[in-house]
Image (tube, rainbow, N blue to C red):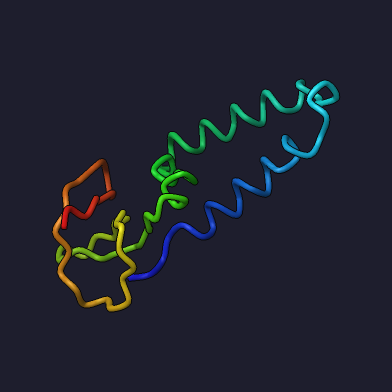
Length: 102
């Protein structure tokens, strides 16, 4: 088990930071529209749309966990997990994404 949300947040902030630093009227929309479209395509095809910055702000955590069938999944939980040998009860939100229910 290991944290899984750190690299996604850094990438999002790195690429979206200029939107918040430039004057809105001076943005080069010819560059930003394709960039936003590419990020949307990547998010939809890579299962990274479950990583929402608001979830982290409200105390949710993301972990890579292994299942008994040797499949790596993403676990979304409210608690901080420090031991990797715990049994997790949850429901599947999508392919390879589990939401802890207890």
